[in-house]
Amino acid sequence: MTAVAAARQARNRAVGLDAARFVLIVLVVAGHLLEHLRHAPHLDLLYCFI
View 1 (cartoon, helix red, strand yellow):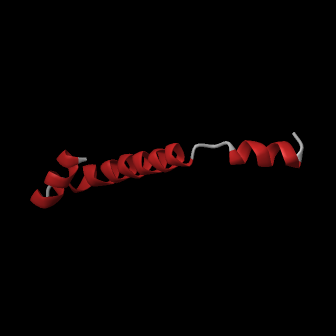
View 2 (cartoon, one colour; view 1 turned 60 degrees about the horizontal axis):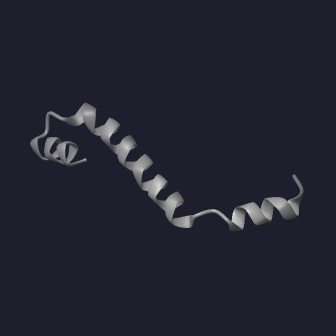
């Protein structure tokens, strides 16, 4: 793939989908981290919300 073709492909990306994917990844990571801290009532509520 040439540099021009790579630049065209980068311009055609859906920025909104990339942002949504990032938010979902952050929520998954936060949920996995909160699993270990569920003994605190406020963190348990946050875990259930996520």
